[in-house]
Image (tube, rainbow, N blue to C red; front, side, top):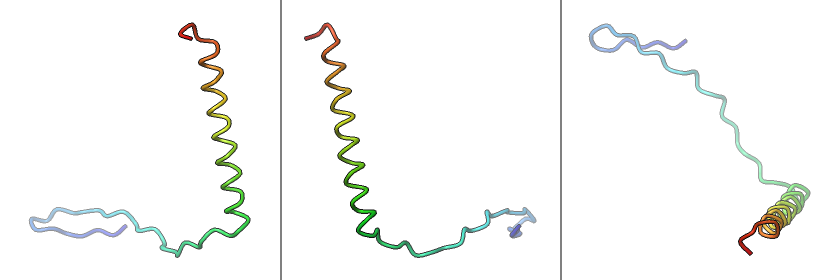
Length: 59
């Protein structure tokens, strides 16, 4: 653990820094999968809202 000593003799403990790496841009296949997942999520949420309004007594 990396300790440093401050004025007055207090020890200060710092967290270990994570290894840094460069992020790679998504591939064409990953982009396609993101679009498919987004459309699926939108349809799911829309259908849940439709069902909630259909069964509620507010309509």
